[in-house]
Image 1 (spheres, rainbow, N blue to C red):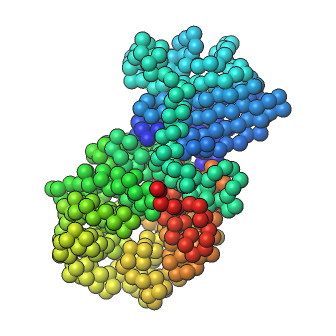
Image 2 (spheres, helix red, strand yellow; image 1 turned 90 degrees about the vertical axis):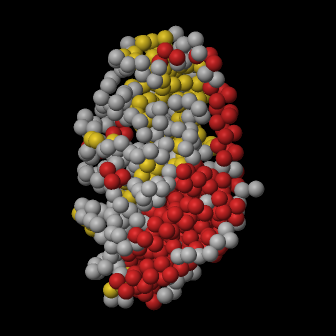
Image 3 (cartoon, helix red, strand yellow; image 1 turned 60 degrees about the vertical axis):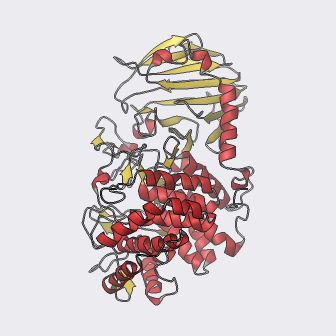
Length: 593
């Protein structure tokens, strides 16, 4: 199984990953951060899945017919079958729309508690129920308009048109086969309304018109990136999770396997900036509003880097020992201990996202309404900018990272500008000057910026210094920093975030850093090089226009949790910044009407 071949669908409450042959291999229920009902992604044998495909060899193709609605087509010598997968809003369900003139083989093996519990099954007249022992929890499968036969536990779908309705219930007695069943199961209407919802949320000017219209892959990556970002939203709170998966390894067989099904402040701000850059202002604003709602008035504005879906503190990290992990990469983790870390750059990302929103919207009223949050962030940073932290790369050391200091400068600099918009004075200019002076005095060695004082290393985060306005791209100090990054962190057109950290050597390039370097190149007029960096990502993501956190250059695949929200967001921003120079992708990135 290759990550680059997986596709993602969502209803902004939960999501699912499907393989290139339409097998559902991952789907947590009832929310993104809960146990999956299909978990083959993390254990080929014990994880469970749901496949429906021809018995004969078939040519298979997949395409998104709308954001987060996937169509898989099987063409055999005997005929054709089309399976359209979507997740209706307001339910913990997946619906599979079937149109086939050949017999299809159906296999459904759900599991619970991360594969530990195998449910019992009861065949119903037009479906089946899966019961969790000693629980009200369960899964129901109901067929609408399809003739399904079973023999010895084997299921076949006969030629025809219809729907397969999969509903997870915490109380299965109130599900598809209950007295409420006919009131909660309208698959045809659900399909039509889900299509309309996504088409309204992401208007057609943001999407490729049809397969084959994109010459270089970037248009597909752009439109699918926006789809992924919106699909990662948890609708009840209005903010996106970082990725819909847990424990997909940074290196096959390694132990850097983390749970990303949380709302990271940094990642959310990057996604907000991407939506803003694309002209999807209301969606970007939703993220900013959520982040303001979870601010902590008793201390650091964002006193932890990540939050649960509703904005509460994360639950403790634990390991799931009975799963073998993706390609036998252990451990499988649920929860993320990084919430204990101090990360000082994230307030800078928040103020930056708010600043970008104003630059695009000119919404002075919103800035005035948000002034309390702006002032609180700036006042806290002004008092605490000398602290050390774990940094953007979540290292275990308490260090004076250059990038963290630069992002604290960005809080003070942009807060002053936003306060002026609201008719208030800039109270932090002297503080901003003091932080900048400290960085220039302590964080430069041999004429270039370094990762932290006393280090001789550069890291990918330093690419942001001109992007946040700290220094000009043409400044000799940054120019030399850029050359050091190109020399030490760029390999075959891909960018590493660093060469090593406290956990050891960095094995693979980091997708987000490639988008940052692309933006730097675009800002200095090196538009071909900027475009080439993104095309390198596109080459790996040809199947479905989705991208991951890390790039396995040797095997041409992604690694880490997938799809990765901030990687998609970085790509959207980069494309929007280079298109004005090249005429590339003129059909994408237009403001919504």
